[in-house]
Amino acid sequence: MTATHASDHPSLDRVGETTTLAVSYLRVSTKEQASKGGRDEGFSIPAQREANLRKARDLNAIIVEEFVDAGESARKADRPELMRMIEYIKAHQVAYCIVHKVDRLARNRSDDVAIHLALQEAGVLLVSATENIDETPSGMLLHGIMSSIAEFYSRNLANEVSKGMSQKAVTGGTNGRAPIGYLNTTIRDELGRERRIVEPDPDRAALVKWAFEAYATGNYSTGTLRDELIDRGLTTAPTPKRPSKALGLSTIQKMLANPYYKGNVVFRGATYDGLHEPLVSPEIWYRVQTVLHAKQTSGEKTQSHEHYLKGSVFCGQCGSRLIVTKARSRRGMIYPYFICAGRHSKRTNCEQKSMFIPDVERAVEDYYRRVQIPEPVITALRELITAEFDRLSATSKQERQAYQRERDDLLDERTKLLQAHYAGAVPLDLLKTEQDRISKRIAFLEAQIEAGATEYEQAQAHLDDCLALAKDCHAIYTSIDDSLRRIANQAFFDKLYVAEADVVNGEPGVPFNIMFNPEVQATALRRQADGDLSRTQTEDVGGLNNNDLVGPEGLEPSTCGLTSHFDFRRRPFGAFVVWTVPSP
Figure 1 (tube, rainbow, N blue to C red):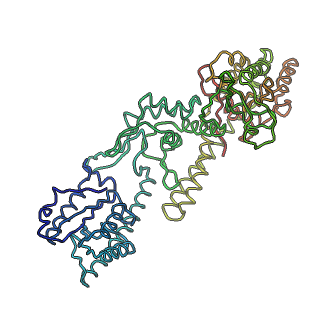
Figure 2 (tube, rainbow, N blue to C red):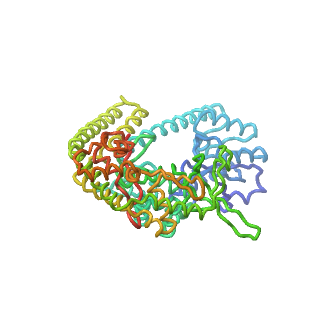
Figure 3 (cartoon, rainbow, N blue to C red):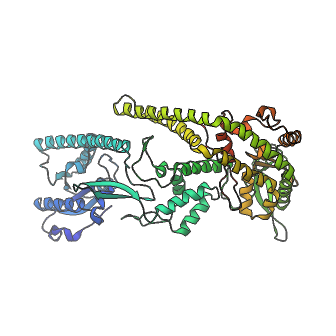
């Protein structure tokens, strides 16, 4: 940043009286100093300028150029205005380079020597406005001493700042600027001492909270969420240098993944309990992480050719994703087609031909009709799975007690780990690794424990929701708009394979992989006919096994596991997408 202040140079009108020319170099270390007091240059730069002007008058010199690095550390030699000053003195005849103090120029000896050598080669004398530094032996000695002191001060200050930031994070404080939705504020205690805290932003906190809750439903992509937030008026907080603006996609993605919003502070990879007020509950935050992961896994992207089947349909020959293309006829008519991405990119030897999209749409609708479960089978499935719930519920209390004991042990372990870290016995990298392990396990255990007494009722209610959807899936699918059809496809099926334009087969997702399984349906009808619902061990039920019921956790069957698979987020026409708490 360069500034010319002709009105501040009383010696400029004496150009004819002297040929002694000088340049002035000014610097502050931080952006905050550069704008302190609401001024463009803060307070420090004008003070340095005035001192340098006084020194120029004492030297009977005029300042012909001023160089200002605002918010640049002296530990870096590649400051833009410093580099421009060195180029300037090489091209112009200048007698003096005036600085407020030596530490304005450099805070390490190697940079100081390099800069001083560049000045000497250009025939420029370095002058300090506040220190007695010149080219005499004593002046050079003082210069060396002051440069060494500046380097020590800089390095020691960096160490002290680092220690202070670490301690602040350990005690739950926020280092730096709080994320959107919060404000850094200063309050005074009863003794009049200033204290910096973080508070929810009254203009933005509610919108940030809504963004998490909305995205947790699975109804929004980050793009559509961004559009909705723009419509609702969410912008960044303005600063003296930057006006407020709408959030970008990357900012929204970082916001949704930031654990700060559930009450945690992360510093150098370690996680601490924050002192600030959480904007969202841990449950909502973890649901958001699950949705983020699911959307990344499904590979959904905003592309020029959009269609509600994209991300759900795959090639029936090679298994590659189907992508949308459009062909134009001789008459200018445009026709949409699905083509195999593997064949299109020549990654596979697939010979699947392009498929007219309306034909694929009708084939998918017909597949929903084929898998829709009749009422008698729904009744039999309900009786079979309810009997299994009853059996598992009998053991769930003991299981939750074991979870509680393990959680308490982990909380004690985490406390002892932090105490050992404070005492210097545990390094930061080991603290981070152990904290991650403990936090993941505690999150899983608490999700199981919090299910509590309502576990069975919730599981039964979710089972009823799933069975209702399975019973009417074709009617639902054909009665909703395209955006909801996309959600339905993602909820019912992991993948829909299209072999020909009119041949579709699906890979149902949990829990519909159980309900749509013909073997499970046959077993349910047989048990109902025999009246034998007392024997409900899963290994005796054809097509129904522990993994079907409990999923990826790998635990013994429990109502906790069952509920997680029947726990659906609300949709405009019912619950659709499954959410489970993954086991570490």
